[in-house]
Image 1 (cartoon, rainbow, N blue to C red):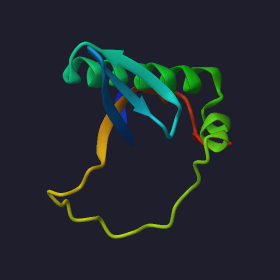
Image 2: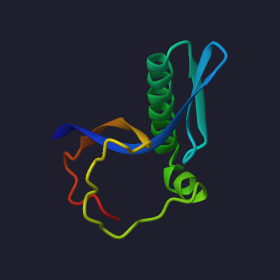
Image 3: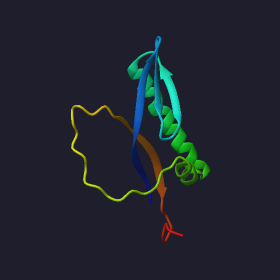
Length: 109
């Protein structure tokens, strides 16, 4: 059986206007891009982060990259209530996956 699955990762971002360009970055993964508008910079960053994460997954380096960037499993916390005064901005990055489980007894080694 083949199934299409999508995982999403919510990452903090920063947007700064520099001259005529908007610079968009994700400090947590050290990914930076730019665009002529705020929206274009956000779109470019979303694409760059998606490609970065997919490439890491394909190369089998995602675990090592996340650990080297300081990621670790956090204890489960109650969801934060969104406040209007929050200055943090996030992007939800989709990671499309295909799962092919035909003839497979279990997925864990």
